[in-house]
Length: 174
Image 1 (cartoon, rainbow, N blue to C red):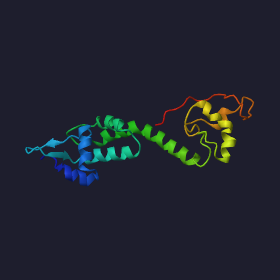
Image 2 (cartoon, helix red, strand yellow):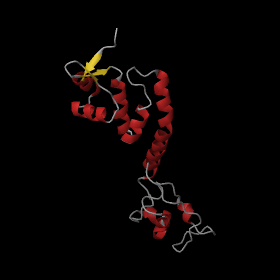
Image 3 (spheres, helix red, strand yellow):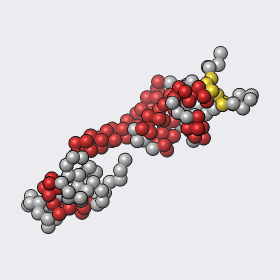
Image 4 (cartoon, one colour):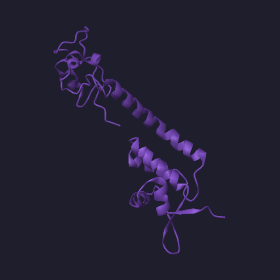
């Protein structure tokens, strides 16, 4: 007996995605509709998980191209197994961990000097005197991985004419 199939409306109600969003994901290859004799779309029940994964992955900040790449590793025409999903989990775990670390760092540093060059907080005068962090590139340098001590003189002083001991190159955002 073949697995029960869902209409696009049923899939929409179950996932919370609009019908147009499901069509978009279908066009991108994240799910594959089975057409009835009347040319109506029908989906496997397992497509609920595919779309739910895509939805949560996007909310976590993964790019659609990365989600597509991962879902392309799943079998079409049969429900993915636990092992199939574990393989995807293993692949994205590193990206998720990097995002978690960035979120934690942002949480911990956001109310202080982040090395952006605004120099508007009292702490900026201590940590980023004369906007020394700008030597490493643009953006919030301390959130991107540079540390205030990276801009100390070799003798340990932190005056405005300090030479940067080992600035890090600008990092792209995840």
